[in-house]
Image (cartoon, rainbow, N blue to C red; front, side, top):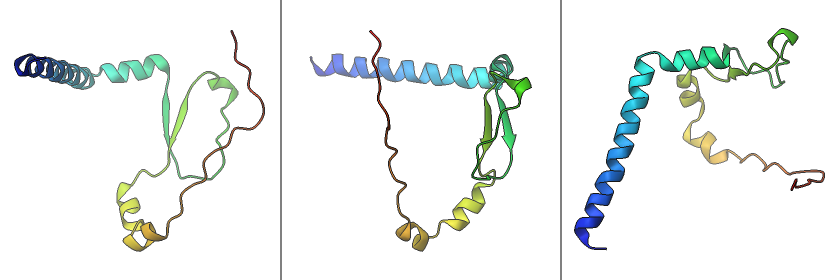
Length: 104
């Protein structure tokens, strides 16, 4: 493949990405994302973390409820100092237990 063809291919890929981003931005500014949220009945609740899962009420069966863990990013920045970052230990990787069957 010669250099000119590579350049035009790259330009086409970048153009598709830019057009896609512009359409998402236009949809967001036109309120289309809010309409989708209403259609899917997604709910975002603001609360402090308790360490326990929040049980879904019976009347909201089938609705996704998302709880924001820390609504103030400044608190996170203030908490994670260089010393705390150096002393932090990674979370253990989850392990699958039980057996799994593959449906054919």
